[in-house]
Image 1 (cartoon, rainbow, N blue to C red):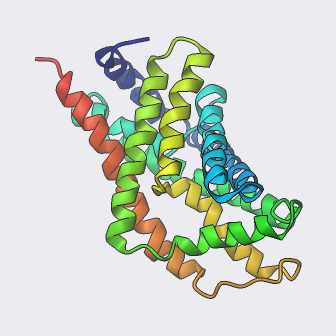
Image 2: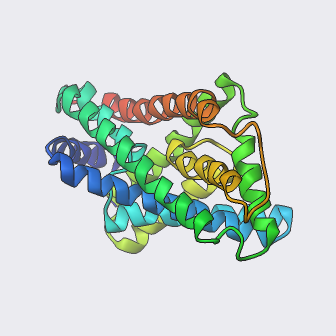
Length: 260
């Protein structure tokens, strides 16, 4: 396992590579990352709906990290994890123009990938194949995203991405696939258990709730789950919080290990 100083140095090279990725390649990797996170969220919903409340929450939190494991081990451009690029940028190792370009492409690609999983989950009947409980839970999760104040969503976004970037940071220093998976598992399980907010996961959860309302097969409705409310009340503050949390963690390590 590399030390935090060595990982910080390694991220300077990683950030430089990410800044130089061709746009099409970066976008396709981002779509894959969105798919992976969405699949982890879908699986977490299914298993949580099949168990009792307390156990279901724990089981769901244990399944969700599969998404980040796929991103780290199989490859993908995940907007929230790439907030670690802020550290090298603040130290002048890469240009902010390249960082913001990566973030923008990754964000759009992640959104498309997560939305595709929402289509699979709803139109494909995954959220109905295990009984009405799964569909009800999926809609409840989507609706609950709108019960947060702007400040709550912002702060939960900060806490979430401290853990996500912490997981990615540790996985960068791990030397084997198994150790990288372990590095991903516990921080992500913790953020799900604590009910923190992840912008890319919400790109699956809320569209799934929106799509369910449009499909007669589900026979359910949640008037508060609307596109405008999703973008302004949840996605905006959570995204800002994710940036602050991830970039803040990256800045802390960059400052601690900066060269004299």
